[in-house]
Image (cartoon, rainbow, N blue to C red; front, top):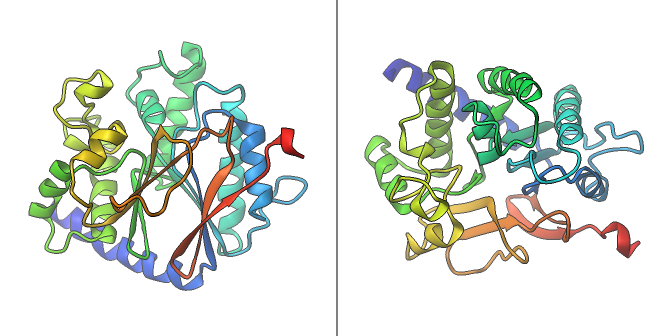
Amino acid sequence: MLFVYYYYIIYWAWQTMVNEKITKKLIVIGDVHGQYDSFVRILRHAGLVDEHLNWSGGNNRLLQMGDIFDRGPQPRMVDDLLDKLQRQAGDVQGDVIRLIGNHELELLLSNYVISGFNKEEAKLIRDKLIRQVINGELRAAYAYKGYLFTHAGVTRKLYKIFEMQLDEPNAINLSMLMNMIFREAIKHEFYRHPIFNISITRSGPDKYGGIFWEDLDDLLNSYPVSPITQIVGHTQVDHIDLNNGHNIVPMDVGLHRKLQYLVFTDGQPEIKEAPLASQV
């Protein structure tokens, strides 16, 4: 396990440095929940797709924060589009990074009740998700220029656990460690690590939540101020706020009602907003 960890450290550190050099912009979109039309509107507004919904973002990068399934009307179309764009972006030195949310995680755990799919379809999707996790196409965490991206956030208690394991618990090292833990958990179907916790607030058995299930209020209240800048989804908010005093930026605005997203240029985030169909 120690060898595997150091292999991940070297590989992801090299990949992060190379990608940061060639990437012009990072575009970050929060929870989609099957809102295909709204998702497409953001992609077009950000200049990432053309009229035929093919990748037109060049060497820019798209990061989607997880939870593409359930609730909305067209989750499979969102999934299929992301699969296609991930392939196309890689051909032109762009990238599509996809994080796992709690709704994807429940499919991986064979809990199909909240997926919105029938059992047979859910099994097929689960098998595909497992392959994508093993291949590195789906991740638990991502780091970019000092920012840490996870679906629901790293609580102070979880950060303290990682702090004991890492000489320097910065965004890159934390993301590498979480991705290694997550990938190995999926490979071996062993989900006892605290990153998989479901807190009491979310009707789970644990005192604090993991990176897929933590409630936003509990996450914010766990710190005076987060020691690393975190970008999270999972809990719906009215709008994106970059300066809320917590060093944690929630960005699940609910694509059925608001089309806000983030654009990072030279490491600096800016809030963008595409018009809703009703506003055009």
